[in-house]
Structure formats: C-alpha cells, structure tokens
Image (cartoon, rainbow, N blue to C red):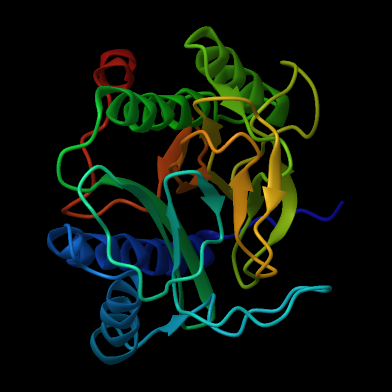
Length: 269
C-alpha cells in the first residue's frame, strides 16, 4: 500500500478544493425541496462548479475499471439507495431522504463531501437515521490523530451505529484523496481498534459511513452504478475529507453552510 503524505502546500490546495465542494452543497440546499428533480440539482451543481468556481466535477465521465463512464456531475441517492445514484427526471417528494455527493477538482486537487437532506416533512425514523449517521461519521473523525490506527475509526463508527440498532454497509469505504479521486488507504467503517495502518501527519482521506436502518446487505440496481439495500430499508451517508495534523485532525470540507458540529465533538475539544 502506498499512502501519499501531503506537504503544507498540498494541504492548502486541498483546503481550497474541499471548501469548494462543501460550498456546492450550500448552494444546493435551498433547492432541495418537493418537486425538484435530481437532474435539476445536477445541472445547478454542474453550472456552479464550472462557471462560478472554475473547477471540474470529478464524477462526470469517471470510469474506474469495470464501470461504464458515470454520466452526471453529482451523485444523488434517494431513500433505499445507498450510494452512486444517478440523477434523473424523477421529482423529489415530501418525506424522501437524499444524499448528494459532490467531488470537485480544483487545480488538480480533489475535494469530496456529501450531506443528507430530508425533503419536506420526513418521518421520525428517517430523521433519526440521518442524524445518527451524521453522529457516527463524527465519532470516526474524532479518532483521527497521529499514532492512531485506521481500525480505531471503523470501530468507533461501527459500535456507535450498531448500538443504535443500525447496520454498516461494508462493501464501500472511505479513501485517500488528493491528486487522484481515490488513493490509499481504504478507510473501513467497521473493524477492530489497534488494527490496520497507523495515521501520520499529512495523510488526507475521507470518512463516509453508509448506514442502513435495516440489514446491511446491498445489491446493484441494474444501471451499473446505483447501489441499494437488499431489504429496501432506508440508507443514509455523510462524508467529510480530513487531514491528520500534528496534534489531531482538521476537517477540510467545511463551509459557511455546513451543518453544526455535534455537541459531543465540541465538548471534547
């Protein structure tokens, strides 16, 4: 495994790309309402990234080995869709939950983040899933510091989620990121503390747990990209990009409109 360690100028470039990615979500937030289509959200995001930010939407035509090129500029995963949902002409309706996943390339560097949105009036169960998944991501982020292990992050996320009666998707994980969309290491959202790679200052990776209200099993929907829960239970995901600092961590994908950090994070800071 070859993990790239970023220097100060690399990290500054990543701060810019990651902030821009988060600002796309800020821009989209007022548009996520009943009646809007995910195609319209994709168009708004694409135009903002290209015309306002002078950046590139990384998902557009992205084609890892074995995949057809991804046809849109963002991923929109609704309700029981776990990840990689392709925007289309279906209108969102009140009660839907949707993950919008944004990756921008600015000056060669990738910024990657996603948020959950509850459309209109969501059920208590849907809001609970979205909220607890957000907390689970932060439980993982809080484990990031030099000398910690990747397994510490996964263990924190898994134990928190499973104690809430939720399940962790295991087939997809966080990843290193920088000049490439996906780099080493893989960041599992489950595992045992004290295992896997040791964290070092300058490592940059995403933490992006996918958490299901029902069972953890998933399947491909048939379009070559969209992943859904086998039991059609709701799935939620949040994603931040973080850098390991000399003393802990810095979340790079924050912007003016980012959701508030959970109280348990600020209490420990």
